[in-house]
Image (cartoon, rainbow, N blue to C red):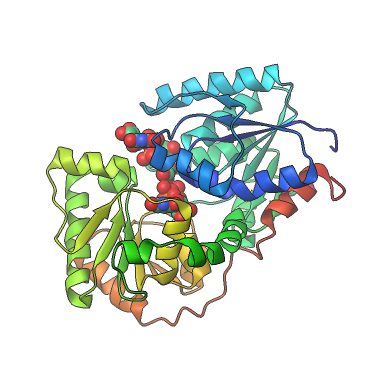
Length: 363
Ligand code: UD1
Ligand code: UDP
């Protein structure tokens, strides 16, 4: 497939981060690609800041889709991606993760004369109430190249009857991204000073999942729980708040406890620095669960399930839901760990392995 022309689709913060190693590897190898930005994320703090800090190339096409209902948003992206794939005579479309941008790329490609590669294939929470779970399952079932981060993800794909020839275990590109930026973050980020934080003496929190923040009672529970954690540990909580959650707090008139400092979303280097130096991370993010595990920082996941069970098996993470007692118990449990677990997500060569498979080792 050495002559193939690729389209790489991204639209949200985690896709920009996790595809950055793939884009760099393509540039290094001279692989020809068209970069499509769906516009699912558009606020500077979720979008342009990542292009700048990660040195990503300007998208060749910007679909400017923005926010909307699932069908509306996905449908508009689907039509836009279809146009680009036809116009640019694309051979292979690459998507990453489980957002609506991924689903749109997958469905558009599956009806065209192009192949689909899915980076981060085979993750399952087994909770079909999550829009991300629907997106993952559909994408994997129409994908031609499924890049599973772990053997466990690969075996979940096999359990669904997916042919072995489509499955490739590569590790997760987040390891590549963390390795590329961890030391730079330690040298360049001034986030601890800017917020008067001491390494090892603060709690980092993120929450943005629809199932948590779109329900008033769960959102209130979550803040009650984190407030109790802050009181017991006598540490401040720093929470770079996703715009979706900021809107819900206002709508539901929920106020965060005084110990919780709400700040704007951060660029990757500042956020990575916080993850690397926090005493503990409390999150509902998929990517943050992985990064905590890679960096050796204990993690408490405020969800009912995780599609990253490898982090729990490694001893790096516990999944507690949003009940305040359970959040506190989870933090106590995880603070007694030593951070000395094995990273299950690969050796930081996922992007290179993906390109070896898609364009060959001499590509
Ligand atoms: C999306 C993904 C989620 C992923 C997350 C990463 C889906 C179904 N969800 O969730 O899996 O974990 O991105 O962060 O694809 N908003 C802004 N500015 C923006 C984007 C969104 O203010 O740039 C606000 C809007 O009010 C919007 C809301 O956030 O309605 C939700 O945005 P949306 O893209 O629907 O989902 P996310 O919660 O960002
Ligand atoms: N992240 C960031 N700044 C922040 C919060 C998160 O750079 O203020 C990064 C984080 O390091 C991770 C990714 O965003 O790589 C996770 O994105 P998010 O939690 O929005 O989505 P998910 O991984 O749950 O899909």
